[in-house]
Structure formats: C-alpha cells, structure tokens
Length: 246
Figure 1: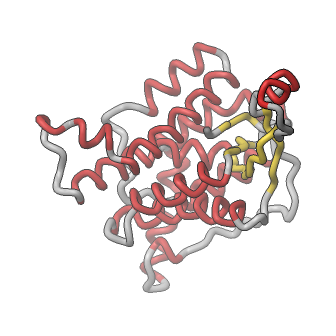
Figure 2: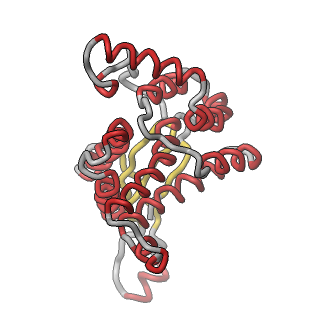
C-alpha cells in the first residue's frame, strides 16, 4: 500500500511503499505514458519518467527507507509459536509539491491517451477501464496524493484545488514543463509555513496557465526559433541546490 505524506518542512511529499508496490507503480507509469507516442506530451512524459527514475533507484536501494508496523505483536507470535518480524521495510522517495501536483493532473491526460491507444473502451465494456491494472495503479497513486492534500491544507482550499484539478477543461497538451522548475525553485526558497500556505496557489498556477506561464512559454518559443531546436530541448537558467531539507 502506498503511503504519501507531506514532508516535515512541507517542501513536498514522501511516497513510501514496499518493493512490490514500487515495482507495480513503476511498470504502470511506464505503460500509461507510452514509448514516445504522444508528441505534444513529451515534456510531461519526461516529468512522469523522472518520478519513475526515483522509484527505480529506490528499488535498487539508492533512496530512503523506513520501517512500517505490519500488525504483528507478541500475542500473535505466541499464538503461532514462532518469532515474526513486527515491521515491514518500505522504500521511500520525495517529490516537490509543484512537481507532484503537476504529475497528479497530467496523468488524467495520459490515462485518456492510453485508453485511446488501446482502441478505446466502449461504454458497454467500461469495466475494462476499472479492471485495467495500469489504470487502477495510477488511480491509486492519484487517490493517495489526493488524501495527502486533504490532510495537509484547509478544507476550503482543498475543495477549490480538487474542483480545478479534476476539471474536464484542463489540458496539458504542449505544456512548457520548464515552468515546473521555476515553481519548484520558488517553493524551495519559501519558509516551511509559507510552503504549506502556497500549495493551493501552486496548483492554481499550474492548471490556470496564467500570464507568468504564458510569458515563459513565449520566451521559450522565441528561443527555439532562434536556435532552431524544439522547446523541449531548452533549459532555463536555474540551478537546484545540491541538498534540501525535506
């Protein structure tokens, strides 16, 4: 079972699960985003694969871990006449709030594209979507992120976020994902309390694609023409700190 929590300094979320949880999530995300089939979503695809990169490293023992109680106690061991471990080892990765909020939203687009790629699920066979392992695994990730948001911010802000994040009018086709780096860096430079207060604001900036985003995208398009390259190949002049206090 995935466990997603706000980090101690509200810089992002921690995503924890056992090895099988991470392996299933890794495979599902890869299958949902496809193998470079969705050209207008390539930037978004790379952000999801960035999460997959951390998941893979966690599975290789190159990230954090924590011990999680599995419900076994002395009474159960006595009843079964055997010594059992009382904790399970959970792997753990971290993701910045703006990053995970974007992934949370853009996965809706990828699920739709995945269904189309499968030939579309007719209304009479809607259970195919419910029973598809890849979709159900991705929806489980989204549900866990949703619960974390709900537990972290006030109810009024949560209701506004969920209303906008689940709007059918949202589309991230051709999204300039360099904007995520700007928001991530802004978040890093905030105090823990200000970060918590700004989670809903970051979500709004992501889905409303306002003037700040439009200016950046315009600059990127002009630069891509100047350098005869795609917007995806451009990087903005921002450097992440080597270490952050999650």
